[in-house]
Image 1: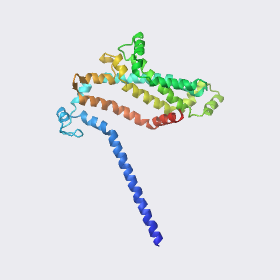
Image 2: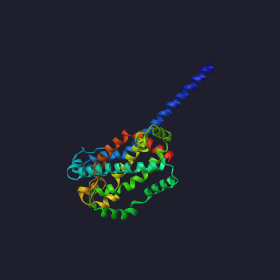
Image 3: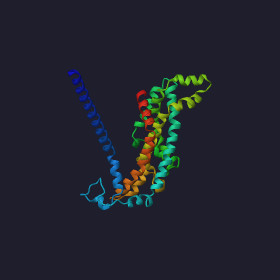
Image 4: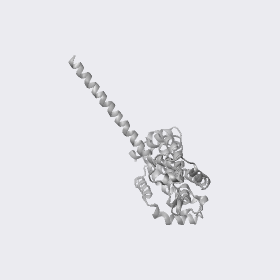
Length: 293
């Protein structure tokens, strides 16, 4: 009887310890989420603050000390070229993603599957291109843009950005393709498919997580790039968000902080929604590519 009571007390003690550990873990998770989301929440609140509320030092920056206003969102949407900047960013990003996939997937496939003696060092050389600072490539790329007659045009970005996105995309896809057994592809060729047909019908569907990772990476990098967009484009009608919003909302020493934050929120929300929609596949693409690359 005494032994049973001792065992019962031990089980209760372990149960309390387990519950306390779980509560502590959830509290840490909530705290980490709040810390990570803090800048975004601050941006949302700032977007709707009045000037007198934002610039008064004694006011709490994380609450509305005065009634919120939509004036700064209206300024962004109606008195700047934000809609044009967003459209330019979207179509440039889509084209860059298409070019990146069209060139990086065949390159990665050939380096990962064809067993050539130069495949290893060629893959490393391609990745090293990504590590070259953009400022070192600026002069050569600017000459190409001028030679093509694309200066002050968003098409210049479509030409330039793949030089950034393709190298790392090739490296990522090489690692992912190496996780797919060659037997699957060889079986498809035994069944009558050509190598290209086997690649399109068997390999491409299996590499979908890696393709999603490349799409997210390429589009995000394109939307956030600043140096080339600032150097190659001057007209407001051709600018993208990364350069158009700062140039219109930073006038001398006057910063339209609320409208700047509104632009950040309006750009971040749709990207975050799409990112979370494909989050599992995105993580699978990066982790499998990293482990096997």
